[in-house]
Image (cartoon, rainbow, N blue to C red; front, side, top):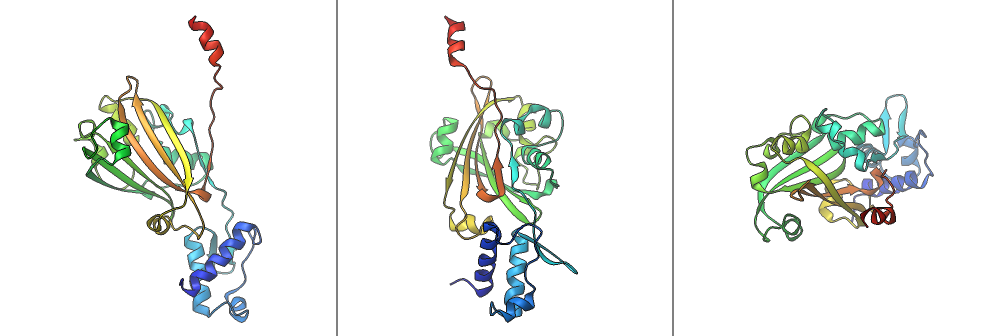
Length: 264
């Protein structure tokens, strides 16, 4: 059974998400909730602190606890991978999303661990390797302030990344331009990608890591990155808190009939 402060935090969070409490609205004073029988002073205080950590409210002296006016982050489509961003500048993908959303960021809001692991089935299939072959896994947790937004784990063939900054576990992107710039400098310029997205119920570990509210789903991303000759240089698996992102794709509309006519 969840502690009382967690149950109270979940009830208030549901009222925020349903619109019963609107952005900019002040929540009841702790004393008012205590008098209403919602719990002790310490219970209500803990519930409000949890809501603040989850990014749903802000608290300040003189203003109390207020529902945060925070629209979902824009998760860009093809624009987030624009070569001018990471090759010629230093705007890696998660930073491109923050810039497009008009939100602040710090490079160390991305933490990471790097290890050599046996390739899981999906990773092996993407790279054309035997299952269990050695690959490097670069696992990142990305936060906005103190609130996690998503995880992303990229898998690489050792011969593509050994001796590069990609396998440096220092927090933040892998140097100027991030991982794509590292691959570019190593002679593996990215050319095209395939992304697959689907929603699912999170695991218990994901719920804890991403600080998900009860009942919140995640969006899982599979990204395969190719060079112009079709070499796979990265397979990435991301898990995103579903309510913290809006997904935007801007692309040219194909005309396969016109293309076919040109070829005949």
